[in-house]
Image (cartoon, rainbow, N blue to C red; front, side):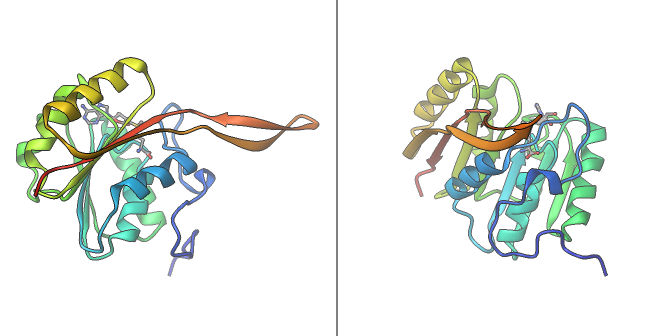
Length: 200
Ligand SMILES: C[S@@+](CC[C@H](N)C(=O)[O-])C[C@H]1O[C@@H](n2cnc3c(N)ncnc32)[C@H](O)[C@@H]1O
């Protein structure tokens, strides 16, 4: 039996516990915690993780929604294998990994999501609009933007679909790190997190 590297019920797995590949993005722990909070998962939620990258959101969400399912969508084949290895590392079995390009792959997905996490796809507004069509009534969509252009595009997207309870936050987080002989505060990439609900 493999040992769970994070034997706690609280989310917030340290970034260093995930297997990583050079150049493949990872949602940093503090940003991830905020996103999970805005996703408001239920124990049996189905989550589409669009642009699943290293798989950190997929792993944490699968551990929270134990009776639910995460569908992790990733366009890059090499990254798909990485997501699987991270699922195995944390012993999660309720993640289905789909190698595909969003939004084209959406019609092939078997389960309708109650939650969507949007971190990939261009143009991002188009991906949001397509994803929203599949979102179950009363469901929630959480998206991130690191550029002003994406913030604008996502804001427009949420306005177009008339999302309810729209919330937007920008993270400003610094971590103490040792660099050379000094302890300095290093900024975690500031990011906008937008979330909204579909009318039931
Ligand atoms: C910021 S990363 C996601 C990080 C991830 N949440 C994690 O914690 O590891 C975005 C990912 O989206 C993928 N991506 C970008 N456009 C995509 C698309 N149209 N369809 C599927 N995946 C896409 C990229 O290959 C990249 O791995």
